[in-house]
Image (spheres, rainbow, N blue to C red):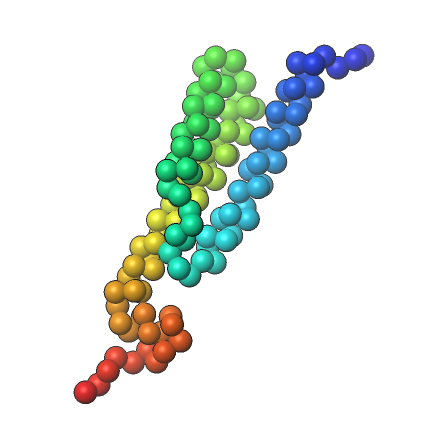
Length: 117
């Protein structure tokens, strides 16, 4: 039985969007290892990606009644939330370390002891 163009498009769509969930992992790992406040990560970009995925969840559930599609996009949305949340946490930690002389010196490889004059 030959595959219709619509069926082929659905397979490609499903494979790509399922694989995309795994493509977020290197970004998440890179942010988690970052020691400079994850400054290269854009809140606006990742939030827009997350909202876009969330709108696709709504479309999948409300318009086409496709719960598998919704599940894939829920996973994509959660990955975007993880990236934005981890970035916020990294920036908060970096800010604390930068403003605290004890931890700032320790993270820079300088003695962690405050000046004892």
